[in-house]
Image 1: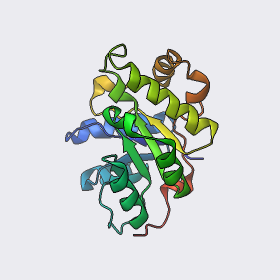
Image 2: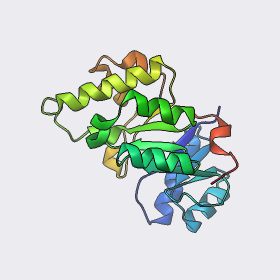
Image 3: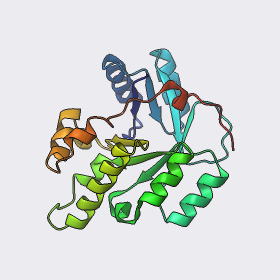
Image 4: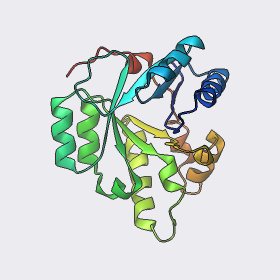
Length: 199
């Protein structure tokens, strides 16, 4: 298994990015993911860190690409996954209510990982969004219990959204999910990260 860090943080400062990559390597991650950027590629090569390009381009031919789509509606997601090789279905907090077991089963049959972004849930009022939180809890329990591919990632775009694993576990423990979440914190098989892309 290879440790992987999906870097969504927005920065155009090369020195800042270099420090981020250095620290990620120090934490033991073999792979780092980011949107396509030649300068970032060079920095990773300089620091001897393998990288994955995270992209929403379905037809890209380059190797070592992680293709993802955001959930829009169920039929569109099904059509895209039927037509293209997709790695991740990323679901934002406001769309979690539209996810059902039938869709999860469909994407898992095609080796697509279901991704939940923890940072989405930092700014919501849990008491005002109890239905949303309940749905999130149900989905996580279903995926772990039925061994469906699910990833809980930070989704941090800004430094103040970065949280340690213990903080993520603390949040989900409030929802009585700690026994489920600790099984889904990111560790991905190398084959998932280095497959031959096919459209």
